[in-house]
Image (cartoon, rainbow, N blue to C red):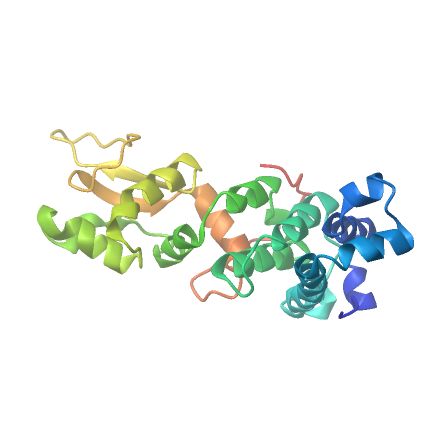
Length: 247
């Protein structure tokens, strides 16, 4: 198993790492009094959990090393436990090198980067935890700082198919549920075409009537935190005061 580098451990609270390790063991067996040699004998009956534990600890060491490597050493600061804890817990359930793992690693890198840490919100962890990989890919395809004009994707009969292809959504039937979910999370919004000059946003997505689709202000901030290193992501402004860290 790969040990956690001491320099990396300084950036992620020790109690967080210890808790993640403890949770990866079999707490119910411990509670039943199966400790030490007895616990070892029992666990030998289950090769998969042992392999999972070893793999997870190696992944944790690699995950933290790559997280820290994304931040220049002079800009590294300790992560807040309430951010680092849920991210490391989630790692146990993510496919290695998946799109979602990359987003969580980016979020944690932002949390230990003094240039970005003030923009990280606790809600970012909760929102990212509700996305699947298809939704994160869709978000990455949306333009920044300008709306997506749906009339550019052809007449109504082909618009959904063309939009799904542009946003890398397969099958296209999940496009509308994806967009509805992202809107409910406050990441995107849209503007409908109305018969009058008035423009307003409404809550039901209809690709035949929506005029523009765009990231909300919160969505832009979320992207800046969870998509570090993306060329279209802007460096956040430094605030003069101390940020609260909550949405």
